[in-house]
Length: 205
Image 1: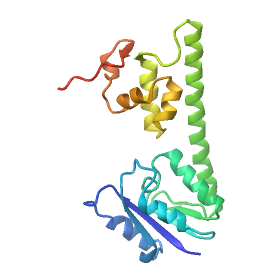
Image 2: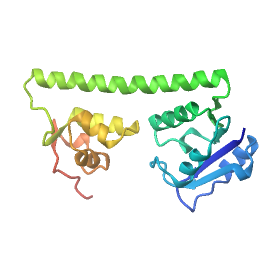
Image 3: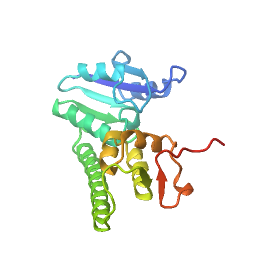
Image 4: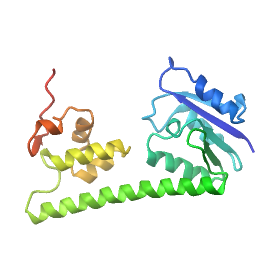
């Protein structure tokens, strides 16, 4: 069994010393700690990809905080589940989450269940909204305008870490429009009454 550590900082100018100290104090050998200099928004990172490929059955992967590993909650759960399928355990120091213990495994399953529940509730609300649209004979598909419900749903799903493709499919909008809403290029909720044209952009202040 080998204890591995993973640390991540967003830029080369940031210092990973705090994470390294915590990993060393947790019993991880310095030679088995991998440090990435990459944005947390990326699922694929050079150091992480290499480390995941090196982990073997019986190994333990330790991180300082959950957000050092996962791009989003769904990404984190997927990675840890895949590790579990390979017989690799997971520990997060700050959250005191440790899948080598029965309680730790239970807590992680609870986290996963909550995330799944939130995804299902979002899907159910979307289906209800589409059903209401059909009942009122509003046009479905990929509309040329963004309504309040779509705008709010995009913000909620983006905050939950859902991919833009999933958000586009759920809201019935194009990925380009979803991206513009996320980047703030479509007028904010406070600036429109009912709908927003997809071509409307925020005015430069």
